[in-house]
Amino acid sequence: MIGNILYDEGTVTSPSVTFRNLPKGDYSVSVTAVTDEGGYESSAPGVATFAVTRSELWRVKGTYEAASGSSWDATLVAYDDNSYVLLAWYGVEGYNLEFAIDENDADGPMILTGDYSYDSSTGYYYVPVDDQNGVYVYPWSGYSNLSGDAVAGELTLSVYSSDYGTDVFVWGLSIDSLVGEYDYVTEGNDMYLSNPDSDWNSFSYSGTVNVEKVGDDSLSFDGLFWSGYPIVGKVDLDNRTITFEPQSWGTYVFASEIDSNQAVVATIGDDMSVTIAGWSAWYDGYPYIYDSRSVYTKQ
Image (cartoon, rainbow, N blue to C red; front, side):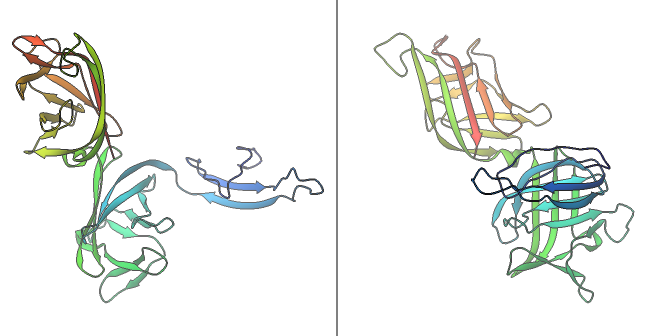
């Protein structure tokens, strides 16, 4: 309820319910247990009340890289009061890092807001990472910082566990975020390449490959049609594209199916999948592949 107005109702079978994007205000939740079993009646309603004092602005998934070298997926939630929660920040559900940003604080904009023990002699906060362990976080004087927005950014944390170092949580699109292992599916039609006994053949291949960084702004994709013959494209993060200029591809030339001198422009999806379509293998002025489409999905 918001005041005397029913906000939502429904039936659930799970042991928990998550409410998101609730407007600020006071709420009450009434829960009644029901059953179809004969001889039993529904329970009396149980009521819980809570207040929403902030609204969620955005949440992003990213990669948390610990100073130890280990990494895992995590989620950062941003609120309209400049506070944040890094959910399952060390990979364990229910153990979050809560902090706020105060840009007017000259000593350091980050403030840890969770119920963490503080050592005034060192300036470290002890933050649990599971039911038995924790790490020490030092947020002062710019040692820990947050930069970015809902599109892309980086959170750095000065930590002390078994070794002192800097943990980094990165989200959004970057050259480095596109590097890694991908599952791919590539389909199309070819002449002679997959079946020498037929003029045109449909093909469908799938597999797993590593996409590698080449220089500061380019990526290498293997497995498009043959393994061991990667193609290299230049990444445009602003337009979310990768441009593959015509290039040698074994004894062929990789280029657009329209023209052997035309580049192939791939698109980058919101989930960092890469779609490369309309490419061909050219030989002696003739395209040997058409209606091609390759989708690389990041693991």
